[in-house]
Length: 599
Image (cartoon, rainbow, N blue to C red; front, side, top):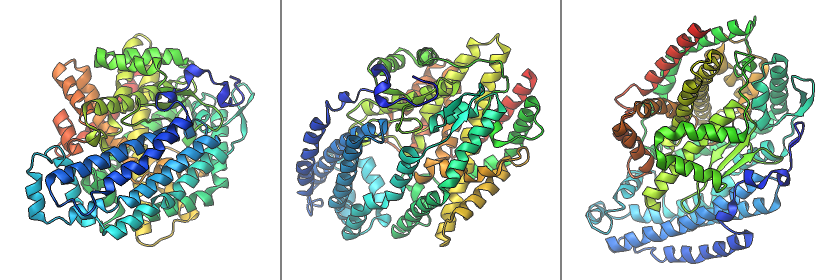
């Protein structure tokens, strides 16, 4: 693989690509399954106007719906993984479009279910819920009945279902524009050689010990987004508008209330996170001032926040070395856990290398009937090792949930989605700190990494969460989200969080356009709460107390069988009565003091 250009997909060694034949041998096999959707949908729709007949009928209808959704999920998973490995590949794009369109049609055709179920007389429904036939589904029915006041008529639900694919167009346009069509310039690395900037390589450049390289990468990246800023504002404006309109149609007080409803989270948890972080900005400022001092800079800029404090420490590694480190770090989880990790490596669950037109970033994917695949864009940095551990945490969470729970309850709540992944990162950090206990330079490097992880996941993601809340409130007050307004608001927030220590380049105002999570409807705050919970879980696991480890496994296996705050509380992390976020931020402050002593 040449260092100055991205390889084509066909140039990547097979053992560094994921094996999608574990799902379908080829597109022809996919199409055969796709044809079965009609029969499954017809089987489900035969229960229409019969849900109130008996508990057994309602049970059979739920099972028929699960069968339809289960196959649709498998079909879409294969299609979107195929598309993501090469966003310019016509077959992958075609299959994903077919799956998405069919999902929209099915959503419309099945829209009768919830209104009809909710129309059942309350007394009769309570009687049905006491039956043996519905005992297994009592939790999901409770959640559904809780949403009764937010469910529209059958006709209205059908219309919204039919429009779901169309209403998601701004998100898709943004993704295609930034992943498939966007091109970045060549920039000079620290050796004076020109290399292609990309979403994946940007992190490597911004971590460079050479400030000129960092500055060139920063300016090239955000100048590129500046060139399409009005297009980005249009897609984000329409996405936020969709959230706001949907919330109004469904009788929620706000878009935030709607986003938190499914996970049964109080709005005070979201706003309380922002308040906790605001109180702890002085600790962030203290760290940034320390960074400026160590780097001997008169002014600290936003592109000076990711590079190592010590230039001489070599943290580059191969993928094989990364695998070994992750396996050894996760050995504290026990033999069963590490055996599954080995299986992921050996059976090609992971798509490793960056290549042209591959989707940027990293994620854990898959569904109930597939392995929990992982997409990476591995560039050989220490951050990439932590990303591997992170995504493996997601995948093992999915693995245990799907193996333990029936399909109906296998998906864990979104609020819990970033906890297992970040717990793995913390276990890796502890392992490396012990491995390099006699290496002061490496100790500093690793400590800075964890401090920066807290800065990125709690401080930065909370800043994103505050930005997301602000723009939704603006939209709720009928204020159009123009490029100028978005840039102004983002710059003000960046100044609030970083301004006392950082003299930010004006290009930072365009950073919001680079964050795809703003299209995910109040997702980013979960990174902050997830890391806060993970810090507590990691502490419990590393204590060696087998009971605490078993509690953590109960969290991994719970899926969606109970409300998420109850699952976490049972496992030892109480967001309502505890001080989970404040404790994490206090740990951040302690780590900054520890770093000062080492320096």
